[in-house]
Amino acid sequence: MDKTSSFLTLPMSILLGAALISVTILMHGGIIKLGRPVSTSGSPPPAAAQPAQPSQAKTEADIVKNLKSQAQKLGLDTNKFNSCLDSGSQATKVAQDLNDGSKAGVTGTPAFFVNGRLIAGAVPFDQFKTVIEEELGGSAASTVQRVTVGNGDLPILGQPSAKVTLIEFSDYQCPFCSRHFTQVEGQLKKEYIDSGKVKFYYRDFPLSQIHPGAQKAAEAARCAGDQNKYWEYHDLVFQNQTSIF
Image (cartoon, rainbow, N blue to C red):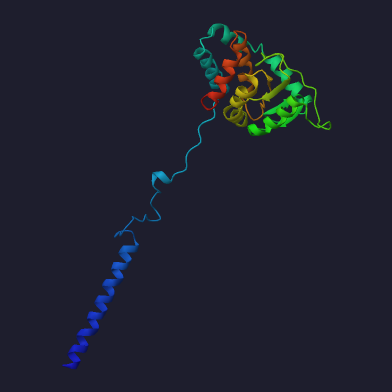
């Protein structure tokens, strides 16, 4: 009786062990799945895990087409605008701004001069406020460095008699310039330009080596200026920067 029991126990143990091993192999092989599915090494990752593909860079022809569409939004004479942009007649004026900015020490955009005092980069409003208030109150230190910078030939924004002159050198395709336009320029207009304390001039500084559409955008804004819509076009380009470039 003891021998028979021993004989039966050993095969049964072997069979049970084999069954457990088989179940384990099946579970880890991805055939039996408990809880969240586990993909095998040969399976492609789920679609959500795929990295986003960068959008295709626009050609200069695409950018020019988009710039022309902005003129339509403003109700400009599109034939006149398109002829101006295609001819490159504004390129010399843009080059003059670029040259003047370089002479004044501008190396990147945006760059600002408040009564000749340089503010470099897309800085917070409070930094402008500090400098402007010093200029308005005459409290700037005598050691403050100032640079002589011309106003350029673009339309003034604000009162010509304003005590403080703010000049911006900027690039229409520059993301930091767009940040300044979106986050700071509106407050500057509200508190200082519209109130007659500051007069504002925009000057072109297209960084064409990294922003291939900036030059034509600068020319386009000047073409809009020929129809007395410079500032409206200026705002529209920054508001639609992503779709244009």
